[in-house]
Length: 232
Image (tube, rainbow, N blue to C red; front, side):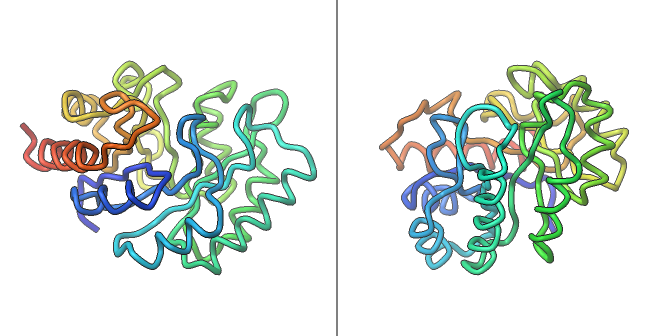
């Protein structure tokens, strides 16, 4: 695996194709990124998997809003995990909190086990947790291997100091992925401040949702890749 690695969030086939052409290393496939991303529908997942060669990690999130889920929503998440595996997902992105805002270790762990052998990223529910240091330990107990985080701040750049602390604490056990507000103008600042090896962007800070100019999106991804790879 090459580093630094860039994951791009997409919610349409056109965006997925543009991101791959732009040089993205991995996709996070979602439905409706304007609300932060939810589980993509099966048809989108199948067509993206057919046409995209780079790894595709699939969001498992039954609705927008908080990350405390009912019994019915949890059952829906389990069914979505199974469908994503059958459709050829390379990894999954998910996370569950308890009402007290601590990580729901038991239910998240159940989804991680169900996802095997696919790797799981604990998404930015992490940033809403009551204590980031404790959340890191709790996510480790679930078996998830990555955490997507802005360090509890509005953007990865603002939360860079916290992200760096998480990178240090995680060592080799969990990969910490800075995300939120990352673009070509700030990715090197984020990289230098956090010492992370994988980065996540939807380019929404440069190209707000909803987007239809996929040529501009491809250029944005390409510029981000070039900046990250060159280190300057």
